[in-house]
Image 1 (cartoon, rainbow, N blue to C red):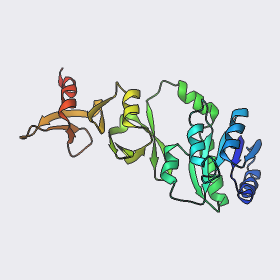
Image 2 (spheres, rainbow, N blue to C red):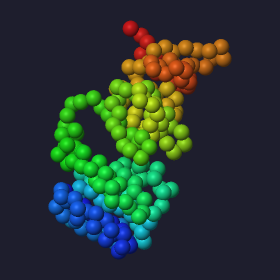
Image 3 (cartoon, helix red, strand yellow):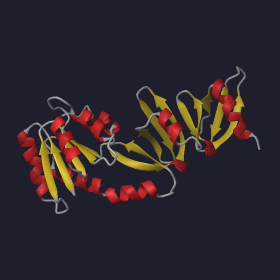
Image 4 (cartoon, rainbow, N blue to C red):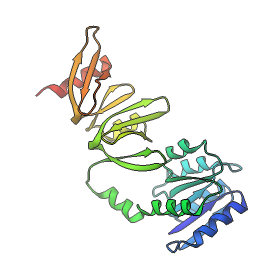
Amino acid sequence: MKILVVDDEPLARERLLRFVEDIDSVSAVATASNGFDALEKLKAAPFDIVLLDIRMPGQSGLEVARTIRTMTDPPAIIFCTAYDEHALEAFKVNAEAYLLKPVQKDEFIAAIKQCQTINRAQKTALATQSEIPTLVVQNGREKERIPLTEVYYLKADQKYVSLFCVSGERVCDESLKALEERFSTQLVRIHRNALVLKSRVQRLSRDASGGYWLQVEGVEEPLSVSRRFARELKPLFHS
């Protein structure tokens, strides 16, 4: 396993390097003092994990993370920062963990182990398997995969997309548009800010004022449907 430590503070880099030395599975370690240097090293050689500070001169860690996520085979990202207000932004770029400085060794080791659960070989295998589609979502500070078959509906609220499923409510990193395009045969739009799993659609009704409502399996209260999308829902009820 190869790790890249990115931090503009020498003492912070040294602390992480000491932790890394105690991990037997690490075969190589490199360091970078800023975002530009980090991206240059990532272009030159593959890494499995990037330990990334957020506030650095030049490019911030979040900007570096966004670039990393455009790579064909991106490394896992663990943020190591003194600031807790960027946690949500960090999860939007699919960070595996968000550690606050001074980073504690036990938390650090746990985060590394989390990254190792899906290694490069497993990622390739998952990409080629014809299995049930899954969504990567945020559950607190942890990531989890939710099978699409367990989803009830997804709803956009300002900057976030909430996913409602068998196990509760989660935050989804993808936009509704991206999800609709990726799962066009499984999801149907019922409102400009909502998608529903087609297989859970039960009944479309209309109230006295002409508004449309959709009953979804597993959801107690019916969901509001815009008139525009009600027309697209009707074929689902034709035998």
